[in-house]
Length: 387
Image (cartoon, rainbow, N blue to C red; front, top):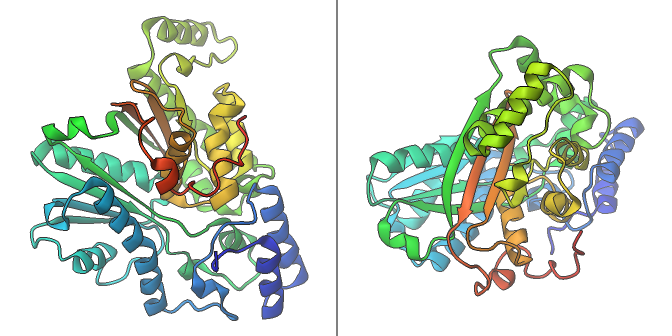
């Protein structure tokens, strides 16, 4: 709780620094007020200093604070040894030290010398899905293996002290949080695993100049945090989402839904929104801002409960980049909504503009799991109302 960053405290510190003008303070206040962020999100200790500390060594200490607890938790829950890990993938967009973040983890847990390590940077929120895709492909080649994906942004390096609003967004949008996920192709794991990866669909629009330039300006658009999107960015985001959702629909939707989509498209009438609810029971959506969550939910014709996980994750923890989806997964599990056979659609977006979908199928009943007491929602899921 000592790292909690309520908006009043954040703005007070920003004012005391005397490096922001009144317009910049007002802008950051509006972002936090409209963006859907609550009063219990966390900033790393480095950003609680006046002035904030953004030295390289301090950021490495932030990495220790983020990654080591989730790794410890994962190893304890799965009862595996660090020596059993064959593949390690670390997602962090903005901080790329040498030795690498994966090397820091390998050193801390004395992993094997032949562990295969990867560091994904500059991928934004979509790094989580890319990490899953990379791990899945590697597991198809390396049999009887364990792969661990660690996600978490080192946000102290992104602290900005100027007047450019596109950069000021970074100060008040991202918050501290991390996740660690274990994937395996070991046959014995079928008895204990929670989920099976059914589909991974990735689309990339960076080859298009308009989409690429819009992606560069993405954080300059106030729509990411709940205001109005500029037209070029809105079109680029919409096109990327449409391309990915169409590609996913081609592999998961039943035949009658595909036929309806083709017929409506050929007749060039209203856009037909397929009923993904016929094959998907739960949704994890991009949680960059409440406005984006609402727009995606509206576009997919989702109900309040289906967008609830993304909205309450943003409110309680803020934008955690690639780790956000696993907090959403933990939320719907803590609410005891996931049943054996249910499918979860994780929809990821990132810089580029790139978009990815991951569909997971629940392999066993989770009612007996004590995730509610062990996960990130153990102290706050009950007071949150069902939508």
